[in-house]
Length: 567
Image 1 (cartoon, rainbow, N blue to C red):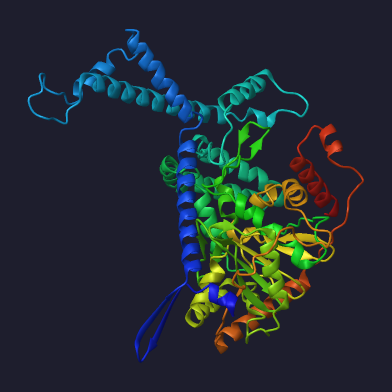
Image 2 (image 1 turned 90 degrees about the vertical axis):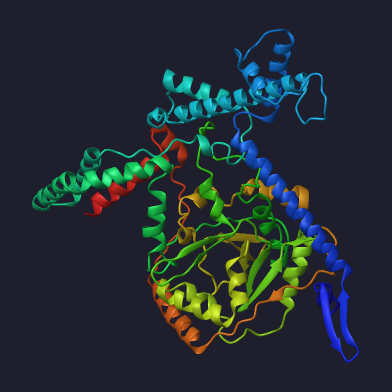
């Protein structure tokens, strides 16, 4: 009970003698440290936002411009062509001789202020000019069509200029304001590509009918729709992403379980048991999750072409809230706890203590406490995750019942930063959420299960799973964090930490019925899935490179050839 007592900051007791008030100094200290850490994160977020906003310039370049302008004025050279004098003329002047105290500026201060104002304006104009130039450079698409092993002079010159423009080390969101907008293609070209793509799938009669429908669409509805798309493209960088997410992903009512992409990462070495394999896993995403606070670098194609970094922002701290007709994505700027599922029970594990991220030894201790907890699952709790695997309408009903019955636990379930569970054997154990899920396995192996398409992130995790490279995670676990000879995480755990919080549920009979109905759908889908994974070693990427084609094109050709041979 002493550990639980540490988590209580304020206590009120009512006695016949009056009102008693008890204040825990340790709890107040932790609140103070957490507030300090929160303000530090806000300052770092503001700093990174400023640095990304002025990229490719930097604060040091502003100082150089100010000093150069001041030096020129000192040498009687006016680089502003009279603008500094105009700015100085607009500033309030102190009367000479001064008869009464005034808040006006002296001539020397006016000169300094006007010089700084002009230098700042020139520096901001240069920043906007360079960002515009960078956007024009990124609009070049010729590098996509260059054959492998050969590159034209135009593309080589373009790469050289791009490297010069991005010579400063970019942050995660440095290129966001310089990325070109998605252009609206002409209707005629779109219709022609569509007819070309469906020609092999239709016979002559149906193809002629499709041509007539395409011509009718091009003459009647297409001009008005094209005008709407152009208007929308003026104020958004991607006129199609929000509609695609809304109508394709969030409005889909089919189960997410078989409509998601699954990835896995295997880690060799490390601890010897399950509690030792997971502590390092949530630390890396918590420290390096893509957010405005992150100082990481953007994904780059060919080392010079930046990819959109906003696509990685919702990999963590994101959940899909079900609705009857459409779902909504809930994204939190920050989250400080971890959700753990074990033997039909849900736990909340804090990732921070005193404003600092918990070390692996403390996380191992918390996970060991969960493993040693003998309490049984609450009624309906063991199969609660199965309610997310059926149709979205059934999950919406479950969500409404959950909010009415156990609002606190349901909100905690929607606000976790990360998720982990042991002993995945039944279809109701995983929770269909759009974030990666670490799965500790025996013999020091950790897999990663996720449902990225639940949040419209199908292609994001394929290129960045997890947001921290596996090599970095392995190197950090081996050389920085490390393990003892007994296989436990290095360090001394703090036993005064409050134990993991067991989530409480009060599921009504209607909720249990909805869970069972969803489980029947999930079992039918699981039994209908036939998945075979094997190691293909006949040839690798070396052959694809010798064919002078991209891996995607090679796979597409192979699939189309197989489809043609089957038919």
